[in-house]
Image 1: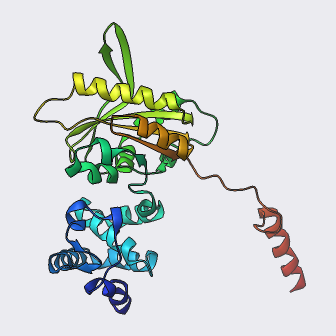
Image 2 (image 1 turned 90 degrees about the vertical axis):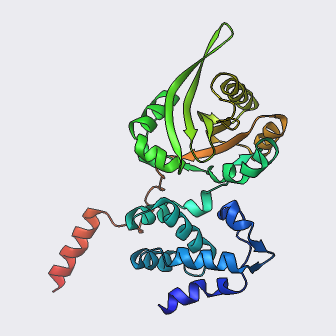
Image 3 (image 1 turned 180 degrees about the vertical axis):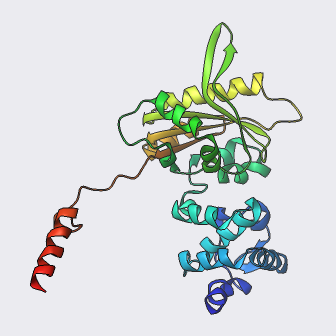
Length: 289
């Protein structure tokens, strides 16, 4: 209980800027670095809406980082996370990845929703659940993503509904196929996702922007849907190249990287003993005794 108090006590009077890790509704209630009574009450309400078992995890994993702890408190309340789900997201560095994609949303998406649109992005996306560790191509990666659609939707975030894979769009006399098409219920818009297993190139943004425009003409319903968003998820990107591509586009686009199963370096001799080494040492100890 003392650690609980020490973790959140700074937020009773003065609070560092929380930046993009809170929703726009919460952020608008800040007056400089001073928490208003309304925000303080909201934080208090969320803190006491989370079970103590969750708080034990947060105290352990977020010691000395109240912003991170409050981020996960807010996510837990908003999404109804169980303790196991919370632990999973704590271990996937969600706080560090959430809202980090390079985008042009502040310039190309409706002002009242641009921050929320930014928050639905991640960089990098964690695709370790696909189980891919060897050689692969784009088709295999997309198949693995959809074979694990529940985990894929969890990684994408709250509000995503799956529409289709290789979604066909007839544009003039040409058939075009979107890698993955989703609809985000929180933003009321279609989300086009293109997956590239190589390094980002300027042409990728042009292709994605074309698909976004096509969805606006063919799928978007006036009065119901906001403008379509495009997210390109690639294996690698040069941030300067990506930024130039975003500045050149008039469509709301985001560019992120993805990670598969994390690869660990080969064993350095003397660091992690093999089974044979353990058996040898155990045998030597038995002989000595």
